[in-house]
Image (cartoon, rainbow, N blue to C red; front, side, top):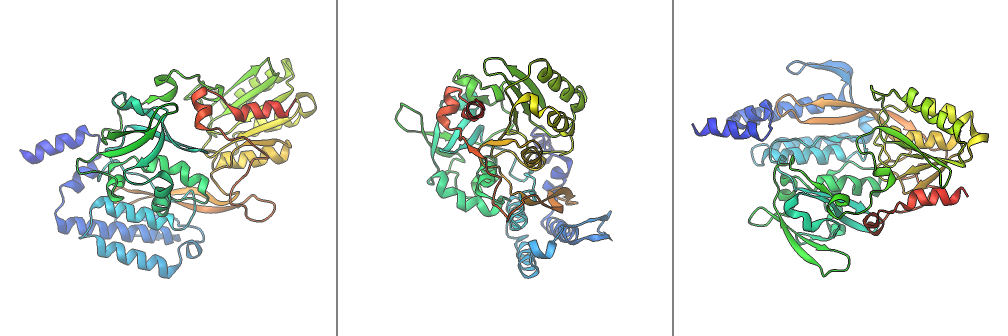
Length: 430
C-alpha cells in the first residue's frame, strides 16, 4: 500500500517511468545500474565511430579531441572515484559528480542536463538574473513576490561572488560570462542547494535581499514544484517592458521605429518557425526596409541561444545587397548570445561591417560545437558532448566575443524599463 502510494505521488510530481523504476531497485541493483551507466558513459565519450555494444549498443562519434579535453590519467581517476562512490552517496551526488567531470573540459556546449528526478525536481520558485552590477531576482511565485526587483546580498551564509567559484567546477563554461549566465539556473534545484550546504534545517534557503530605497531584509524560501507560476518583475512591479522583451515566445519579429528611423529586428532563435519560415520573414523585413529606407538596421541577438547558423542567410544576403540604401547595421549581443547566434554575430560583423553593441557573449569565438546526446540506459541522465571544433577568431584565442561598443544593462535599467543597448546603437548611428 505504502509503495503504491509513493508511486502515485512520484507520478503526480511528473517523474519518468525510469525514475520510478530506479526508486524501486534494491541497493545491489542500484549499484549495478550505476556501474553500467558509467561504463556506457565512458565508452560513448571515447567512441571513435565504431559500435559500442552495451545493452542496445551505440554507434556514434564520441567527443572530438577526447584525449586533449579529458586527459587519460585525470579521466580514469575521476571514473574510479565515481565507481567507488556508488554505494556511499545518493543518486543526486552521482549526477553532480558527473556534471563536474563533464564540465572539467571547459567546453560550454558539454554538460549534463539537469534531471527532473533524484532530488532535482523541487526548485526554488524564483528567477534569478546576473546583471553587470550583481545578482537579482526578476521572477517569483506569488508567495515570494516581495523578492521581485531585489539584489541578492547573500544565499545562506555566502555572497553570490563567494558562491560563484564554489559552483564553477560543476558548470561547463569557457568564460566568466557564461558561468554567471548558467549559475542562475544551476542554483535553483533542491539537490544542488543541499550539496552546497545552502539549505537550513527546515529545508529552506535564507536569502538576504536589498531593494532600492529600502533597508535590506531576509526571506526564507522553500524549494517546490517547478511548474508553479513565477510572476515576472515587469508584471509584479508594473515596470515598463523594453522593446526587446515585448513579444516573448516569438523566434523572430521586426518593427520600424519612425522616431529614429530604425529597422529593429529581433532574432531569438536560429530556427524556422513553421507558421512563418524565416525566408518569408526576411522578405517581409526587407520589404519594410525598401518601403521606409532606415538610417540604421538593428539586429538583436541578446536572447538567442543558437540552433542552425544557416537560417539567417536570407536576411544577411538581403541586407548585403542594400547596404548603401539602409545605413549602418548594428548587432546587439550579450551573455545569452551563444552557439549559432555567436556565429551569426561574427558573420554579420564581417559580411555587413556591422557594429557589435552590448555586453560580451557567453562563448569563445574558437570553440567546440555540433552537439550529440548520450542517454545513460538506467538513470536516463542525458550527457551533451561535442563533435566539431570551430575556429572563428581571426587573431588569437579570445576568451569571449566582445562588443565594439560596450553598453551594459544594469538592474536599475531593468527596473526603469530602459534598454541602454538599443539606445547606444541608435545614438551611434546618428
